[in-house]
Length: 320
Image (tube, rainbow, N blue to C red):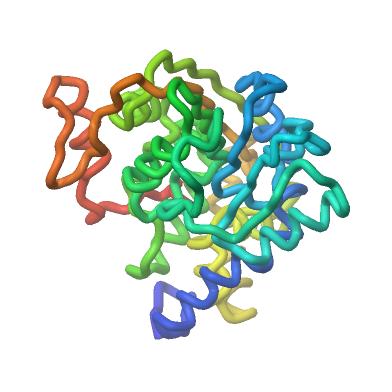
């Protein structure tokens, strides 16, 4: 039992972990419409920004419901494009959106261990999946392996620094309940910062980096709609809200509503902010950053390293 002021949260670590895993199953049918279609807009912008050519074979890694693959319009191609995700429920939902369509094969697969031959693809997409990888550098290593020489990468990440004050208030109050439970490492919330994403791609062996951003705004009508929306913003808030009893949730929302109204016109305003980047595989890619093989220590690399490998002792209120 965990208590904060008048809110009591009950549950065990196993319950919390189950609720996190349930997110990926239950979110499959909500993902496309979430926050006024913010995820759809981000997928369409990434597809447009990458400018895939007719001869390029695609692998969509962490494809979720298949938004990026569908936005690319590659269904019916003879190139056998691939879209993979660790969640069977997401893959099932993705397949259901394109019944009988050839050209894209959906498969359950771990981004850290891609079951493909070397040099199979021309371009790899990571549509909002990078921040959820347990080991991003291992995922990058696998992407380099399956890309052809001079292959390309296209990535989108949520940009937390462009979140609204209302989003900060929500995560701050949720954090007060918390209680240390496993979630995405705090430094992963930095991945959507343009300079961080650029540096990561360079460290991972890509060059000719291009970056753009997308901001999608939406506003909830009241605290109930807001909490429902934010609950589905990621596995951690989903699990935290799921642990609240009906009474505790009502108290949480009452306290949140009082705090929100102090923001004036900014209450319940949400920004779906995304950073998008593309790059090309260098002819001679450096080894992935690890304890055995570190990138050359320059001032920029040192700065990003201190951010990416920072201690998780301080909470990142806006992280998923």
